[in-house]
Length: 434
Ligand code: DLL
Image 1 (cartoon, rainbow, N blue to C red):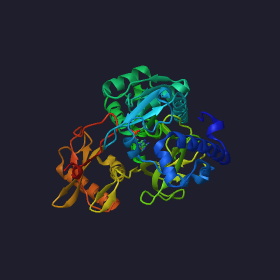
Image 2: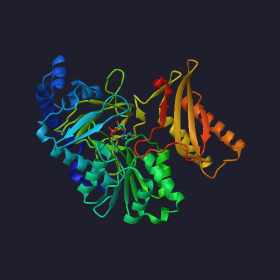
Image 3: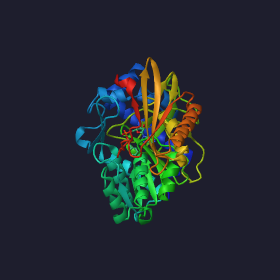
Image 4: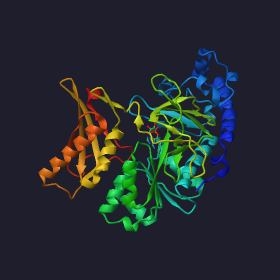
């Protein structure tokens, strides 16, 4: 269901006109309030009056995660600290944490954006939304929570952890919508199935994000739980969950373009790429007061799809991010995204493997090695060495043809790979540790 047709179904001309106005407003105020932005504009010989609208976006300087570290904690805020009503933080995989801040108005917009997602997933005031993203400095818990509250649904703020209690809560409280990472959703689905509880739950949808996941993973979640699973995207620097949201068509995520302008660029040259081409996603926040960013380099790799969506929403769609440019593994000179490996593995689940896997990259005698450990399904093959070896061989062949390099596949015992309640940790790159 479309939450607000007037906003989500504007004509493209109306969207552009709105973005033009909002971009000009944002550039002007940031020039006056954010030192690094003013400095970069001056270096380019640009004044706010040079920016007449979206067509001038590519003239503006990029911003980077490093800026958030350099100006830690509050150096990029564009309002007095008394107007900031909440901060969130993210530690990421490298370096110290980064801090972002929201005004009351920013939180209202965020709630509305997230409510659009829940509504698109069929949510209404009648729903029970179990939020098992982490509550705290991570944006997942409170972001989904506020979106559900905006909609008038009943929030079950379960947060992460204690899988048995999550399951009990889902059964007893009659949760109808689940918000969690796709890997945790899959884990919950496996547990519910194992405990013969699928018939006892009222779940109709899951809203999953915070990490890349594949169509195969979606299929597994949907089939196991008998629900629809929707992809939601966001990042702390821009807003948290709800920067873009998937509609009932499940063909990419609509970017909340009344608040964020997306671009795809060539990550090496910075050149803007045409719609449809894959590259690095860049966002400009045009309504954010507390912590605005212009042309922020997300490092996420995806493409934009401007085609009209049959749901009626007119916001541009972004395709599923396949990974981050900084997650990309270079193995023996070949670029490998973990999602490519997942895609292959998930295709062969019916042969007796599960969705739990770990990728280990190392360097032995100056040569990169790629090991993929995959859990076997509990009731399959455990004693049948010939079948295990055959399956390993099959997976190795499939991986070689998908990746263009060889990988060693080892099937391991069920439940031997550690589960994560938040973002899954799929890759161990020992080359970085040494
Ligand atoms: O993960 C915000 C979020 C919470 C999004 C809950 C969705 C649901 P960060 O911890 O700052 O924020 O991580 C942001 O996670 O740049 C992507 O690399 C990745 N990511 C987020 N959503 C998706 C998604 C939250 N749907 C980083 N698909 C982003 C692929 C995603 N990657």
